[in-house]
Image (tube, rainbow, N blue to C red; front, side):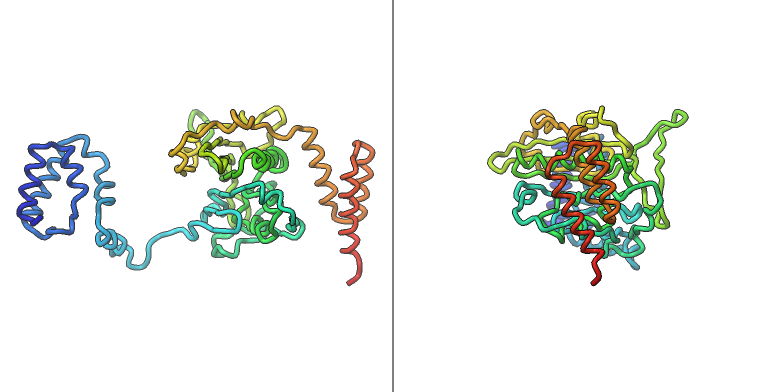
Length: 379
């Protein structure tokens, strides 16, 4: 349509069909065509006046103008003179690894979120070659040094190096496990929280693969306000020379699906970064997805809107490992973490006196003893 006829059409649209129709028409037209025409410019002005006179057209005008621009105009914005020497940006936006993806916070030196996929095939692979003892914490080589956290930042800080994508989810592959030890996947976490409640949450996620074919997990930090003198305050500690931020809370959102159906179960949790007793259940920390999205600033699993999502805790129970079961885990850790033969024997003798141990502990003791003996043998 030529500029002349479009001009008359614009005016008729505005006066006879009303502001809502102008909104639809004005946002969909190709503003590049005939844009130099005097008549077009005059009637564009008239349409702007019509839009201004209707309350329902005032809101979101800037968004409409941006989204309605042609590729040519978007390029013009990106090439604006204010960006002559580059645009401000954070690097990198996302880091892709074999079994997880990270959105990294270059200012706080910790992840914004970490996403992973769990399946029965991964967690029960016959050839489980990965060993935690072969992995070590280290700065992520994919992040510029000025944005990296360092191991020294955590030393004597009072905080542990807490995994967001757990090493235990990657026993099927050594490289995948090694990648979970990059400090881009780590944040300062309370020791008791990391070793107990959060660990039991991770085990719960792994156990879901017995009931569901695919389990998707996204974990990350939060900085939530507290009340001080009648005011809301967001206050958190930073550690080390690189000012690594300590989150006030951690979040985890779980989506469990079965490949044979379109059904999905979901649950979101916000957990304080502090010790949590066995009296607390996982459901005590369950929150609506909308609250987590508001608190974190991210939208999660948007494509699940296509089908009905059930409450995971109503379907799967959301029960964590018991205190007795967790004590067994802690005993196994003590054996596995012994740094020399003398320490191993001390741990073993104490455990043998205080607990009734089954044969699996003897196997673990012998395995660790052999590893330590090999370390002490001359090369």
